[in-house]
Image (cartoon, rainbow, N blue to C red; front, top):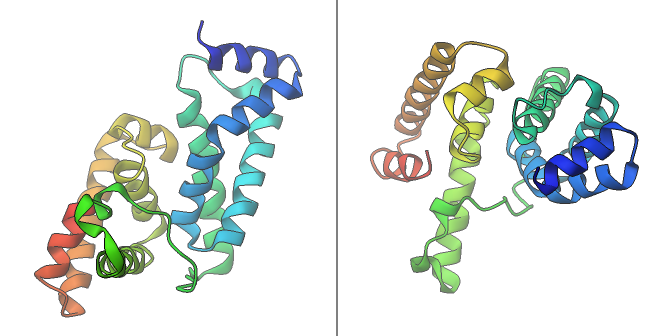
Amino acid sequence: MNEEQVWLERARRGDKAAFGQLIEAYQGPVYNLAYRMLGNSGEAEEAAQEAFIRAYTRLDSYDPAHKFSTWLLSITSNYCIDQIRKRRAVLLSLDEPLPPHPALHSDNHKGPEGQYIAQEREELVQGLLKELPDEYRQAVVLRYWYDMSYEEIAEVQNTSVSAVKSRLFRARRQLADSSLERGLFPAAEAEVEAVI
C-alpha cells in the first residue's frame, strides 16, 4: 500500500490531517486544471477549494479501484463546467500570467525575447481554448495538459472512449479553423500543434 492509499484510508475514516496530505499533494494539478478551464486565477482558487470540499464530503463514493487523481480531477472539471455554464461566457484576464505548458517553455525561450514569445504563444493557446465548447475544452485540457488516457477522460466526462476521441478530433479541427480565420495559419497551426 503506497502513501497515497494510506492517506485515503485514513481520510475515509474521518482523519482530516490525512486529507490535508492529499490536498497538499494535489493542490497544484487541481488549481491548474481549474485555471485552464476558467481562465481566471481568483475563480480557479475558488474552484479548487470547492473541488476539495466536494471530494472530502464524497469520499465514501470514491472507488479505490480507480485512480484518486482521475476522480479528483473529474470533480474539479465538472465543477468548472458548471461555473462556465452559469456565467455563459468565459472571461480571460490577459493581465495575469498563464500557467505554463511544458511545450511552450523549451530552452530556446531564455531571455526577454524568448519569454515574450512564450507569453504570446500562451495567450494564443488560451484564446483558442476559450472558443471551444465546454466538453471539447475539458477533453483537450485533460488530454494535453494532464496526459490523461482516453479511458480516464471518458470516466471524467461520463461518456464513451469513442465520444472522447470524437470531441478531441472536433476540437483540433475547430482550433485549426479558428487559427485560419484569425490569419494565424500556418504559424499558429504549428504552435497549436506543438502544444496539443
